[in-house]
Length: 192
View 1 (cartoon, rainbow, N blue to C red):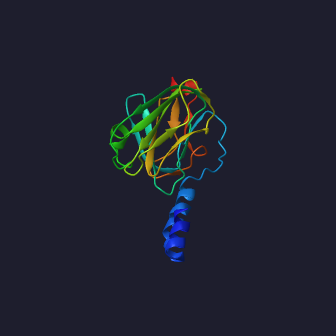
View 2 (view 1 turned 135 degrees about the vertical axis):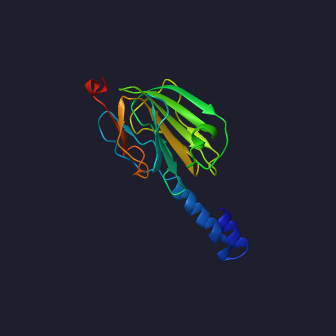
View 3 (view 1 turned 60 degrees about the horizontal axis):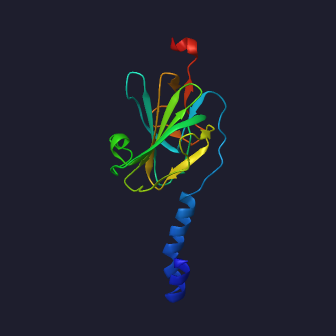
């Protein structure tokens, strides 16, 4: 609308910046369908680049995914199950690709009780991202790859899980929400 008004009041070229901005917003908020692979897996909750695969304790691993402004920003649940908790935390707006963003930035944490154990998924705001949207609440049942919300503009997603799963990605890998496998369940005999 602003583009049309500028073109009408000034000249046809005056509306171009507004048209470009509108096209970028349409591109940014795209929401493609995804096919989630079957099996006892953890799928990526976001499109982006794996920036960390680190142990956070003796029994937990964290995979961090950085989303730049050109990635799809719709977030999906990494495992099927029941949402045990949704917790919002105010915080800073550090660059989302930095390690400190996992603990210091504004974030929304979903804890899902899945078939092989508890999986934590964090929607983390970044330097530009100032709004986290979450569609789910505690008690909701979710399917793997189901839409759970989005983060506006550049951001980060962290997935934390226990020894029930074995990591299948490495730092630098590009992943797609709902379809890329981050980890797969370890058989019970192999855990012992």
